[in-house]
Length: 510
Image 1: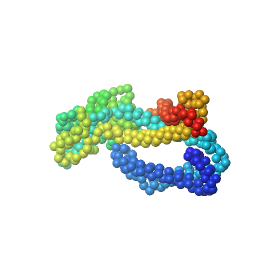
Image 2: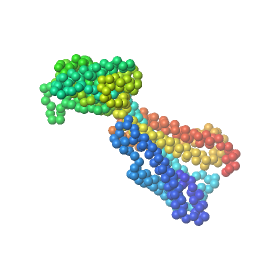
Image 3: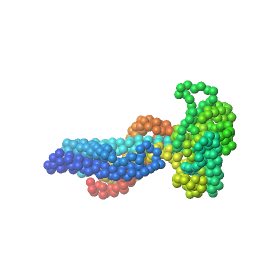
Image 4: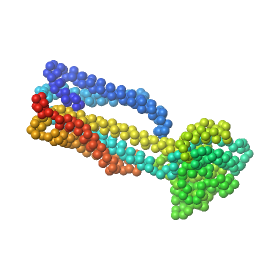
C-alpha cells in the first residue's frame, strides 16, 4: 500500500501516455499476487518443517500432537489467505491510484516538491498499526513468560534433580493358594533384596519403589475418617501411592512429622499409611495427625506426614495423598526411583545388570529422569509461551522495519529541505533530534493504541495466566521500554544519514 502511494506519479504518466485503468489495476494485482504467493510458499515450507519436528516431540504433552501435519485443509486455508491478502493490498490501492486525479498526481509528485500529506499519513498509520500489533503480542508473550517462570518457581514437594525412574519387572514365584498376607510378605522380601543391591551400586544415594509417580500415572481411592457419615458425592478421595521404604527419600519428599514407611510394616502388623500435609490439616487442624486413624483401603494408622506433592499438573494445588507399604497393599506395577551423585542415565547399565541378576526376563527400558516428568507437565505452557514469543518477535521485527522504512523514505524525500535547513545554520545534532523525535511520535501513537488493545487481549487470556495479573505493570513497562528502544534504534540510522547531508550537494540536486 505504501509502495502504491509512492508510484502515483508513475501511473499518472502512464495514464497520460494512454495506459488504461484496467491494465494498471491488473499489473498491481499481479505484483501483489506474486508477493503473496512467495510469502505463502515460504510459510508452507516453514510450516511443514515445524509440524514435522513437532510430531516427533514426545516431551511435549499436547493432545494429538503426533498427528499434526500440513494437510489439504491447511493448504486451502493458505490459498484463501494468499488470495485475500493479494486482493486487499493489491486491488484497493490499484483502484485508488488508477482512479486518482491525473493533474493532481503529477503536481503533487513532481520533482523537488514535498510528498503529499495524505501519503505521509497513510504510511504513518501503517507504521503505528504495526507498532500497536507488536505491542499486543509483546504484552501477551510477556504475561505468558512471567506465568511460566512462576510455575517453574513452585515448590513441587519433591526434588527432581539427580533422580531417575526405571520400570522394573520382578518375580515372586507361584502365588496360587497363598493368602494376601503371604503374597505381601513375598513381595516385600523380593523388593527389599532388590533395593539392597541397587543401593550398593557406586553413585547411588537413595532408592525406593512405587507403583505410581507424581506428574505421571495416578489413581484416586476413597479417603475418609472412620465413624463420619458423608452425603452423596461428599465422600473424599486421595491420590494413593503404594511404595517401599526409601521411596520418599529417593524422590526428595520431606517428612514433616512422624516417620517413613518401614520394612517392619508387614502384612501381619497394624496397617499403616503416610499422608500429606493437606490431608492432616483438613482432618486434624491444629493437632498432630500421627497416631490417628483413617479409612483408605481399610482402616489404617497414620505414622507420618509429608510435604504436599504436585500430582497431576505443576500449576494445580495438591490434593489429599496417601502412601501405603507394598507389604500391605497390592501395587500396580513397579517404578524403581534412584537418587544418585551422577546423572541418572549413567546408572542405566549397572542397574539393568543388577535387575537381570534377579530376573533374567527384565526387559530393556530407558531410565527416565524425574525432571523429564516435570518438563512434560509444563511443556504445553512452555510451547504456547514459545509460540507467542516467536509471533511477538516477528511483530517487533516488522514494526522496526516499518519505522525504519518510513523514516528512511521521509529523509530521502526531504533531502533538499534538510540541506536548506543546514545551509541556514541547523546543526547535525538538531537534524538528528528532529528525525528521532518524529520516530518516537510514531512509536508513541502505536504504543498508546497497543497498550489499550493489550489490556483487552490480556483479559481474554487471563485464564491461561498463573500468578500473574492481566494488568501486570512490570510487563507493560518492559514492553514500552523495549518498543521505545527499538523505535529509537530504527530511527537513529536514517537520522544519522540525514545529519550527514551535504547542503551544497542537496541544493545542487534541487
